[in-house]
Image (tube, rainbow, N blue to C red; front, top):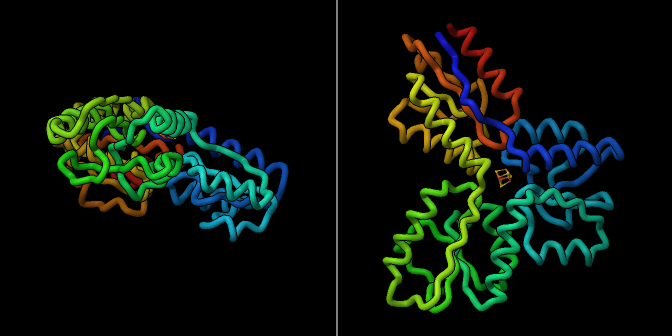
Length: 280
Ligand code: SF4
């Protein structure tokens, strides 16, 4: 069996930067609290937890004098609460997410209401909305009835959505709401890092019979990567790690492709590769 890896996969610069900051801080102290998982990958979170980075779900649970905001950022209220509590803020918000937050906030200040093409319950999306004083919503379906798409509306995207999907959404949204809209801005806030991984998965699909997409099931960009790979028509499986590989998937298969989400470490990909070699 030939194993081919995508020409681009795994940690993006935003995740690498966040993990590096946490590790740097752990060199200076034994314990640190992170508000939510630093990235959406259970193996990375477990690894950092073993080194002393404890995940807390609210600021009331912080036991040290500092708190880390993750690569997905945080809303204004959380920043204010951190200040009120006198905690040191270690901000690992990815610069691309930060830019999306600032863009959305500026548009609201200019009088626009913001519609984000994205998942309402995703941390990054919630945190962008958290800067908009209630003047934003997140939707995935352009026909969805939402309370604000009237007058001046700005369309933005969750960073991990594909650019093509965002533009298709924007076109459908404009069509569905054309009678209510007066002044529309469309700002492409998709992330090039994830787009390049999606394109690499499509190139990989041209060379293999089966694709394994490695990464956390709670990672939006990994789920999207698996969707992009599956849309090529090549059999695709999204696995958290090598323990989820089923031997019958590779039975009689001559070429297997591997790719991984932007929050998946190289070690996870190496373990999958090793398991495939053992199955061969
Ligand atoms: S996928 Fe893009 S937006 Fe998300 S952390 Fe990585 S670089 Fe930042």
